[in-house]
Image 1 (tube, rainbow, N blue to C red):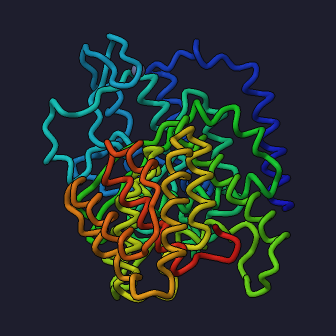
Image 2 (cartoon, rainbow, N blue to C red; image 1 turned 180 degrees about the vertical axis):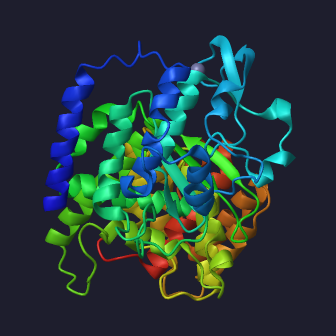
Length: 439
Ligand SMILES: [Zn+2]
C-alpha cells in the first residue's frame, strides 16, 4: 500500500512535468536519441546497473544479452536507428527516413533474425522507433512470454506499468512477474489473459477503474513468446479498445462475484470474492490429461477468441464434452451462465440468442436428468449436419414424451453448429450442475 502511494506520488510529479511537454512536437532526432539512449535500459535493468558512462557495447553484452537473444554481430545500440533509407514508417505511415526493424524486441539483430527476409521487416521512422524502444524499457516476462505496453504518450506507458511494478513484479528479479497466477497456464494467450486479470484486480482494489478507463484506448499491448526451448518466436499485439473491454469484463466478474458471495447460502465456497467467478469458470476449462500442454490446449483456443472479443461456443462445448467423457467432478465450469452473460453484455454480443437457446437446453436437461436419457447428449453432439441435428431433437422429443419448442433453434439455425453447442452446454449444466444458483 505504501509502495503504491509512493509510486502514485512519483507518477503525479511525472504528470506535472509531462503536461508541459508537447509529445506531438517532440523532435526525436539523432541527438535526442544519443542523449536518451540509456534511459529505457535504466528503467528496465535498474539505474544501479547502467551508468551514464556505460558503453553501448557493455550494455548489450552485460545486460541485454541476459534477456534477449542478441546476435553476436550487434556491437552497439544507436547505429540501428541511424542506418536509414527513404520509406514508409510501418506505424505512422509517414514517408520519411526509416530504419528497418530487426525484430520486435529492441532494434537489434537477434540470432534468429537471419531467417526473416529483409523485405518483410517492419520499418520505423526515428520517432516511432525510439518511442517503441523506450516502451520496451518496461518489458516484463513470465516464463517464455514477454510483454510491454506501447503508446504515443509516454505518460500512458508509465501509468500502465504502475500496477505491474507495485504488485505483480517480483522485486528481486527485475522484470519477472512473480509466483503463481490465478490460473496455472502454459500457453501465451491464457497467460497474458491471467496477468491482465491480476492487473484488473489491482485497479479494482485501489479504486482506479475510472482513472484507467480514459486512456486504455491509447495503449497497445505487445506480446512476444517463444517455445520452452527458446526458439520459434511469435509476436502480436492487442489493441487498447480490446484491453478496455477485457478489463471491463474482469471488473464485472469481480463485482458480481462479490455480490454473489454476499447473497449465497452456500457456505462451502472458500474462494476469495475477487477470484470467485474467474477461477470458478476458467480453472474448470482445462482437462486433466496429465500434461499441462495437453490439458490447456482447448482453453487456450477458447481464450484466444475471447481476446478477439468473441465467445467460441463450439470450442467451449468441446471442452465440456471432454470433461464429461473424462468424468471430471465439475463437468460444466462453475458460473457458466453468469460469466458468459457478462462477456456478451460487455461486448454487445447476441445475449438474447444465448439466453433463449441456453434456457431451452437447460429445461431439456432438467427433463433428462436422472433418466436413462442422460447420455443422449452424445447423439446430439455427433450430429454432422443440420438435418441430423433436427432429427436427434425430434427423437429426443419422442423419448421424453414431451414437446420441445424448437423456435429458438429455427430462429438461429444459420449457425446451427453454434446453436448445437450452446444447447448441449445448457443440457449438461442442468444435469451436472455448475454452482448453486447458477441457472
Ligand atoms: Zn513513424
